[in-house]
Image (tube, rainbow, N blue to C red; front, side):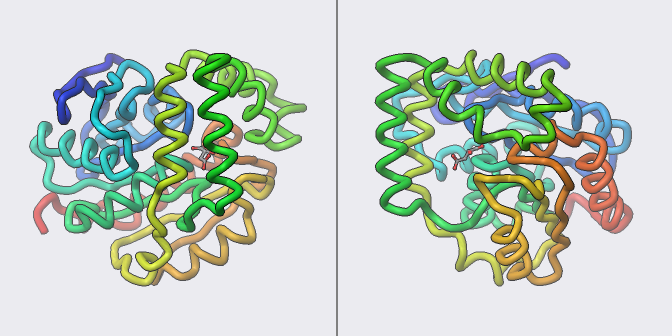
Length: 274
Ligand code: MLT
């Protein structure tokens, strides 16, 4: 899957752009991953749809710039990517930090979100304790590098089932996270700590929405996901058995089936124009 690039703000943003079809889906990766997170989704979706998966600023092959690093900036990067591709609207989907970006995209560019997918994420902001922990971890990334952050985060990401049955998922994540730039890790941690409270947006979301998460996600627990997901009018809220926080990698067949079914529910009526 070749990477392509655009200029966004004052930096180079890389992205994968695969497939064609009535629906364009933008997939936003979590922290501290990159667009290869979506390796199991891209070919499956691209049989029917156009799939665009950027490396968010500082991750994968996208540059880190001197501009302030905020979730709002990441959302504007997505809007600039759509501009560069001549796309007025797209389905915007994100996992975890990618979900925070999707909420912010809806806040800032809502007419451009034709539909939304929130995977293993949450609309509420960090608690003071969580913010302090982000600052500690940012310092860890700067002083001891990405691997130290991976060692701390990785055990929390996957379900016990995945760790026991699919060691290759843990290996792939370790590699992806270990390759992340420590400066981008620190910048993204502080951006997540400062993110807005997206809960007031929930009742305002009027486009088709899929909320999905793992039943064993310890970072964005299933009961909370069901609770906030149901505040989005008409949203489809689904749990994936035995999956943890990276449900798209842990149970790709189940995740793809939900996503494809969701996209097909409006693909025939969806047009690029408003
Ligand atoms: C992620 O997977 O993107 C992170 O767990 C998000 C977070 O730390 O809040």
